[in-house]
Amino acid sequence: MISDFNPDKVLSELSCRDLLIRAVHGDEPSCSCGAPVRKSVIGTYQRGGTVACPCGRRFSWASGTLFSGMKISPQTIVMLALLLSLSVSESRIAETLKIDRETVKLWKIRLGGVE
Image 1 (spheres, rainbow, N blue to C red):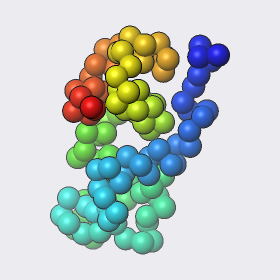
Image 2 (cartoon, one colour):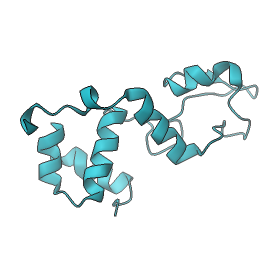
Image 3 (cartoon, helix red, strand yellow):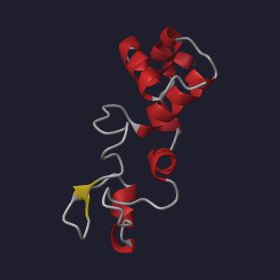
């Protein structure tokens, strides 16, 4: 059963991305200039799309954060953080999530050890 586990099929991408957005931006996402994300584009932003700011910058929810350039799904990051917080071994996490152990180590550092 655990060999068939796939966080992308168990968890909602939108809810996991929303959790990550709130973790790094709080309840009011904004551009690095400080301007809040406009209501007219908030849906695009929440779906992971790039939005334009009146200041001229284009950005996504991950721009300038520890999630910038991530190569794994939001669901996998949420599960990885949960498993790290439960002190599951790096090798077991890698096996369960079907990712490389080095990826687990890198995300453990990025997430600050997750105690």
